[in-house]
Length: 257
Length: 304
Image (cartoon, rainbow over all chains, first blue to last red; front, side, top):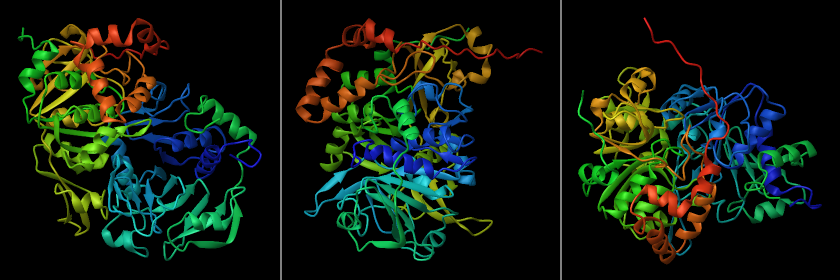
């Protein structure tokens, strides 16, 4: 919650995600919070953004009723294209997708994401659901944005498994392994917003959410986190953004009440 | 007139899904998941199945929890609106199933390659990922023309693809609409195709709109008439998603002992889909999930 309780942390994250979308961009929309981020951007500053969903849906308009997940029938209603996953992925592979959104269970300093399996300090394995389309989105979009919870067990020195490649080992790694473009541009977490150094490709803290201190972020990060020289505070969601989010997520399933 | 391929679902499963079969299902990702098929396979105590799919919602988790599965070749296994699939998690952590990890694109490519009758397809996805480095069905290659690096995804040919369709004639000529995920590739790739249809209609109804046909009827082995066969997933034109059921399943599958109770009440103690819908779900809930906001497309002229 915000200090004054006027919005939830999830609402702030969705608003931050929406601001990553520019008008006229083609957005490959992921699950959960990004689903709402796209709707928010579309309703405010990016009315001409186009949404692609991996089920094989292209939308030019906001769905007529709130949806909990992308396969809900209102998300098919009067869509611009109903096709196959293969078609959506081919648009992505050709380079037509400006930005994609991905969630993660574990991330490292170069933005590599793991949603396949993790190991605790005792070496016990935890099996996670897997890639879905995340690996494809991370490989083939012109940029991708990561949205996840900021906890020390999730922000680790090196991920246990690269499900969705980020900047790999930094520098020119993506080019070296043959990836045609892209890479993570932004990580939106429960504590702040992080971006990547243009040369080293290492994650840098760019803003902290209202009420969060840099040392709070550092304490929840498993490596020596770099902080931007012009660190800012993440803008709180506006009243208009909160109103819209309450309409898109009326029961607060994703964003809380 | 071609002979009818219509069978009761139980008989179709008996005949076309032997123990050890590689079954592609849940191919539209979140919509049209053939739950009725999965529950029948559980009732028939199928064993040693390989499940093939993209993002698979809770049906994979149910089949795994019931002990039907040895191997999974898929992009994601869980509960789409809540995350973890608990039976899947337990099975992977105890090594009782083998998982071949894919992405949605690599599994599409694997089925597309088989549908083309070739052994692999190249791509730009998964390069640098552990999906590519670990999965024996994915490797890298150099493009024979540009010498650039590509990933190569080996073909996957399922023994049977199982699809819930909106309507089919008795020969397996079926209309589908909505977002189809990897349904087309899987049906083209599979040795056999098993359809579950919301409605059985005349061939004339089908052939008046042939652009909507999933796959030529001669490629289909059997058709079962199973209204509400995809419930609780949504079926375009027929019913909406029942989110409550996915939330309930989360609680019913968290602990193995609770899952056993769920298996009994929701699968073993009901003989078929019709009684499941009447007894476990009920008319009131079915009414609430029905399509209330219709949107009928313009007709098109196929004449000459």
